[in-house]
Each structure stands twice: as structure tokens, then as C-alpha cells.
Image (cartoon, rainbow, N blue to C red; front, side, top):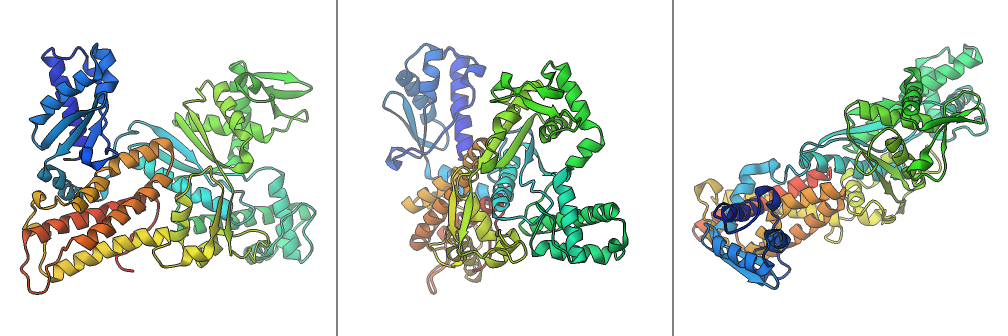
Length: 549
């Protein structure tokens, strides 16, 4: 019996009590029932505080309601015992067979185990990374790439319809400086003041010349434009390639210049004016964001008629809304903390609820000890160098292992170590060990399809392992709701530890010439179920589950 099935059973008992007049509640008032593992295992397999939640509505006391539930549950199939503790907690112990049945359920469910409908009906636009296309991705972008993609996977696993999006800042003076820098390097001259330096610009210039041998023969304005556009496409292509190598994929690459070129910025200003939040002062056009918590009003159109970045931000927000995304999540770096109130003010000015329709997650800085600065960029640690030096799996796992709002200082050499002190190795090794146990079992003639008797997996180690496995779907749902992928990593480490302890106590293959028995076959189900959950969890983090190590 899974936690979901047990919760459904408890709710069914409550509905029966409503139907026969024992409980003065409606089905709507009962709502969703949740079960969780008790802190002390001797109290039972599962516990619920539903009696304490519903007693006041039902006009009774929590303990009386819990005792009524315990009596009804006590006679249900799969329940060995239901008892009341304290003011109204209900502790439930399952029959050995009902608990062990989970192993077969997980194996048969496969990759879908852990998926849930907690966020079904939610349509989410999740924007992350969004680095300027004027240089390579660095360690700061890497953190958001790992966390953002893990969050996409979590939200989808919990039933949400998610569109990962990359906003390309390809408009404005920065792009002109970029083009002038590429042209200067192509001509073998120094980049202009405030331009882009680094070996990567020289490399881009060589590639631009290869595509446009006539570059240096063009009039200067045209040459800058060609260098800008060709260099931009090459740099964006490199960003997309390294993201793909990092197992990060976007459904949408949205161009800022398209906002300007399509007239979307002017349209956005007009729409916000219709909402009553735009006013004119000092020759400029302003958005009255102070009405919604911002520290000052923001300029949309400068006195010289040029739109500000904030105007583009407003147009971009409205674009997301128009494209059918009621929920918009932004993942921003620590230096963008001031943007939070501004973005929420835009949402409010657009007629949305800033507490519902927009969510801004701020990530703190990350450094990697032992990392060499990029030879191409000169003053940053490039994502491509991290992949080559440490590897995609250790980098992704480690960055997903910590809350986004915690500053990180990582030791690159330790991340490369292949020992049990390295968390990603510890979890991946557990999966590889599980697969090795399965291969050995096959060689000894132990086959799952020959038998499954859930009553044979009732030891303390079995129970602990089953408990971890049972909690995976709720863990996924909770991590998705809280936007906290690190919960999955910590869960996997606990599960790996439980498996390693179980492995030390439980034989799947018989010793020597001993015959194969049903207990071996049944343990193989539990072994493989654990491997499936570890693989599913690693997949949510974008990390591989190796067959051998």
C-alpha cells in the first residue's frame, strides 16, 4: 500500500462516516488527506493529523474523531493496526504484505514513479540563465542553468505545463559595443573603451572574417553592423551548444530586439496607460510603480523618446501574459535583487496579482576553489571549462544540492574525487551497486518474474528502505511546490544510505550452492525498486544513473 492509497483509504473512511451520519462534515470540508512517516518508527509506518484538522469543523474533539477513524481503519485490508496518540494523532501500522507490495508497484510503474498531479492545471513560463549574447557562460550562469532545469523537470513531474525560456538581451548599446569590439579584433586593433575584451572576442573575429572575408572593406557603420550580427549569432550558437552539453534545453529563445522591432514596447506603454498607471512628467513617460511597493516610479520612455530597459521588461511581461502563461517565474542573480519589486509592480500594473502571477527567485553567488580563470575570457570561470574539468554530473548535482539563496564556495578537486565522501559519487555508486546486484542475481538464476511474496520483506532494514521509497512522490511534489530541487538531492543521499545498510544485511543471490528461494526473488524486486527511484530522482536533477562505476 502506497502513501497515496493509504490517504485515499482514510478519506474513504471519513466519507463513510459522513454518509452514515457519524460525522457532521461535507466532502468538500474534508479535502485532501495527507500521511507522513512518524518521527519514531515504533509508533507505526504512517501517521496523520487529519482528526486534529477536522475536529473543530465537525463539532467534536480531535481525539474522539481519531478514535472513530482508528476503529474504522482497523478492519481495512492491509492495515495491521491503527492507534491514537496524544491529542489526536493517528498512527497506522501496515500488514507486512501491504507494505512490501510497494516494491512491485514501483518496478511496474518504472520511470513514472514519483510523478504526481500536485500542480496539474498550472501553466508556467520559467525564465532562467538569459545571459547576454556578448560572451561565454560563466559560473554564475551555471548555477541557474542547473537549478532552473531541475526546477523545470520537477514542475513537469508534478503535473505542471512548463515552458523554459531564455531571454536574449540582443538590443541596445551593449550590442553596438560588442560589434565594435569584434570589428577591432578583426582589424588587429585595440577594442574601444568600454568594449569587450578577451581571447574569445579574437576567436569570434576570426570566425566572422571566415564568413565575411569582405568585412574590413566595408564602410565602418556597415562593418560594425556585420560584425555585430555575425558575432552575435556565433556567440549565441556557442551558448546553446554548451547548454546542450550541460543537458539544459529551452523551448523558447525570446529576442529582446523583436519586442522593439514589432512595436510591442510602444503597445505595452499604451496598454499600461489604459490601466491608469502611466503618466507624463519632465518630458518623459513614467510608470507609477510606487503604488505597488516600488521605491520610486520608473521611466518607460526617456525625454529623448528612447525606451528604457524597464519598458522592454514591461513589454516582455505582457508578452508572457499574452502567450497564455498565468504563472511567470524569473530566476535572477544576486545583483538583480532590486528587480523584484519592479517586476512585481509591472505585474500589478498589468492587472495581475503579484503574489500569484509572478515569482522571482534570487540566487546567491557561487565560487569554485581551484578553478582556473578562462583563458579565452580572461576574468571568469567558463561553464565549458567546468564541464571539461569536473564533468556535467558533479557540477549539476552539487549546484542543485543547495538552496538557491545560499552562497556557495565549492572545492573543484573534491568534486572530481571518486569516493564515498563525494555526494554525487555516493548516490551514483548506490545505483551502480544496485545494477550489479541485479546482474549477479541473473547469473544465479534469481528472476523477479518467478515469484513475489511481499510478506518476505518485513525486516527492519526492509521497512526502513520501503519507507524511503514510499515517500518519493510526496517529496517530488513538495520540492516542486517550494521550488527547492535541493530536497531531491538530500532525499537521494538518505535513500542511498538506507540502501547501503540494507545491502549489508540482505542477500539477493543465494550463497554458494544454496537453492534460489522466494525470499531472494522478492528481495530482487526491492533492490530493483530502489534502483528505479534513484534513477528517477537523478533524472529530475539532470544527472545520469550509471550502470557501472
